[in-house]
Image 1 (cartoon, rainbow, N blue to C red):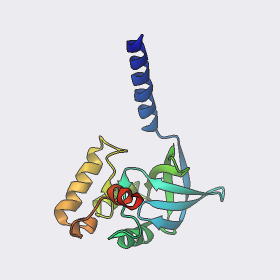
Image 2 (tube, helix red, strand yellow; image 1 turned 60 degrees about the vertical axis):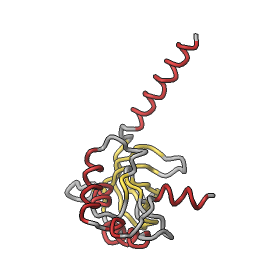
Image 3 (cartoon, rainbow, N blue to C red; image 1 turned 180 degrees about the vertical axis):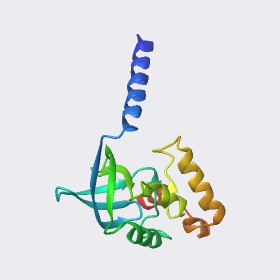
Length: 163
């Protein structure tokens, strides 16, 4: 009996993880505000507005070292731009979780990591070779956060702030 329960739970967990990896829908809009390096507000074609958390990237928090620079990278590259948003549903805060694609189909999330202004968020995108390579490239070149001595990943910084 216990074995059946354990197998059922394992199947449910595996199924939910797979579903989270599949896009829900594609939307089009204009980025009208950058909240920080990895969160933006988008006005959709129907004039509704949503908050988007960039999937796979975790930028420094605004008050964290390099946070301001990461925000300005977002402003320089996204604010006022027409984008394609590939939604993967909502995160636990009700934000749309997704990829932002720029004209030419470049995925901004990946470019943010490649430029060194965000860490690859392994916890939520553990098997991505593209994000792994982008982070390694930024580290080797000491770009962005990798130029900051003793840079602390945002998830560790947030945990320390909560204590």
